Image (cartoon, rainbow, N blue to C red; front, side, top):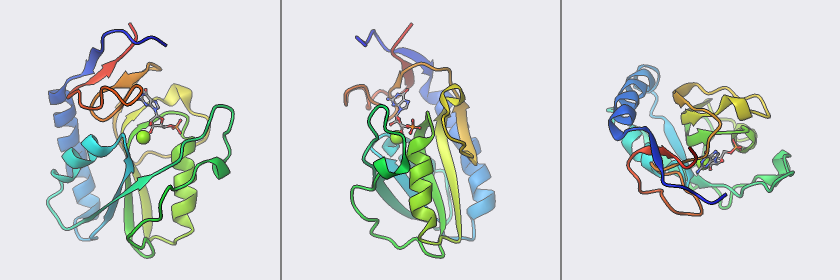
Length: 174
Ligand code: 5GP
Ligand code: MG
């Protein structure tokens, strides 16, 4: 793919408004639970930082870096945590924060790994969802926006490590 000029799909104010709503929803569930909020690097770093600043109650933050699966490699054994979590997950209320769910394989594998550690609860918050691309079933408990099957960049999302710093969610194709 040779990328064209990024076209805005969701402006920073669209995103800000939606994150405010998500924050309120998450607050109703987690206010008294001291949740462990785990961001999936690198893509979620911008969303994570905006989201947690809308959560006005005690929580802890962790990040996880995952090895990605190659094309045609879609078993869970192919997705691994690149370093162990520094915070134990056992008996914690865990909220995983992801930038975008595509096939669902990455998060399905991460959830399998985390479930083995016996968290008190395990839920997912994703900014974006491309349901047309789903290959494995996955419940998104808190979702920002549903998007079409286009390649998106900005607001943490990259193309070849570029564009993560764009403040809006953009589309690279027409
Ligand atoms: P999945 O395992 O759900 O197929 O993969 C999810 C990961 O693929 C996301 O965390 C993200 O890193 C990457 N991804 C999926 N769709 C897009 C996209 O449109 N743009 C970018 N930059 N990354 C994407
Ligand atoms: Mg990601």
